[in-house]
Length: 527
Image 1: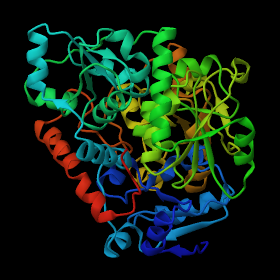
Image 2: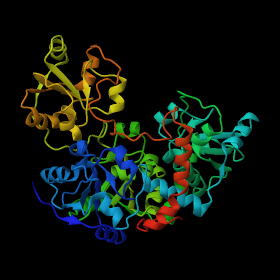
Image 3: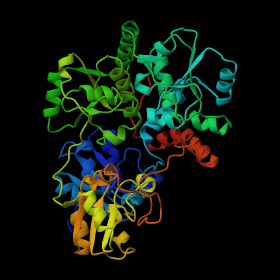
Image 4: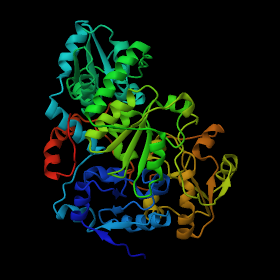
């Protein structure tokens, strides 16, 4: 087994304080990651490493430090990263327990840098807010107000404040004047918990809109805890900005970005940054996914601005890297950049673009290593094989997808727990692997062959192709070969969370500023 060097808590901490580039990778699944991790750790589970590494760590000589909590995943991850072409890979000395023993602060939940920053903004700027009961009273009185939901549209559809409109965070300053043209109209911004409500409200305050504006304190969690009704499946979305309102938003957004000392670069400077082999440069398009698909800069990644600020660690996993933001309206990139700069990133807005520069079309595609060669079978062939004993289907999709629908008789498992999963399953004559598209399944083929010495096939097109062929699916949890730790259940998601979990989440958020102080590596500031 390859020996890798180690890096200590002290070395990582000093690199963060010095604003050096580093990737601190937690290679456990998301649920254990959410239980405890360093502030700037990025979660890239071992099971999906090949699918995510190149996009999230684009420079091969980035200093990467990998850890687990004694599960044996870190050494395997380091080997895979080396095989993927990364040159500077080390293990965290003592793993997660070593970090804690050395005095390192541990944080719960996910997207903690943005959530702790949001609490810092609230503490320093005293972002205006209204309690759920106060907003309900305004609605009951048919007061002049609009409620703007700053989450993704799919989150808004799951549950929303009655009468609210979906306006994801980066769109707020650009769209608010269309939805509240009267400067006397009260504007309420909500999310599920606190962060996007605070950042969205403060964006409008920083942008100088004339309306009174307030966050819905504690979001839909607070609304639920107050015993108030939520809507479901709503479709209300923001309107296009008129030229006059866009011009006002452009002026405001540029002023806020300048106050946060956001850099301005052109395409020539961008190309110079991208050619620099000693620095990482991410290029993010912060418009909507639909706009991105209609036309974008070559090499850009679609990261709608509000989610980029919320989930920076998930897409820019190299702390200390440079971020370049793109839009076509001069509002969304500037507002998003203003927040990222305050969160300690070196961030620039790409200026001087013309319509012709947005020459690429289609959805963003993640860069991938060479995909292992595998023998494919069609959905029809698999259906025939399943008519007689001897074929076992292993499904590597997200567990949430699996329990909703899967190929009858298929077992769900985690790639990172493959050997343990197989111990509880009778060995078949042959295996067929699938996931949503079968992309992840292909990477499992050589591992499964080495473990079982049985024939292994991949379902062409994955479970998506099976369903498209009109073949039957089932909904059950009878064949779970591994614990469902691939995703952390957020207390602010869905509509069936225990009240204790929701209140506990809010209490945790309120305590983040104190944790930031103890950690003391964040480099945040608030304008």
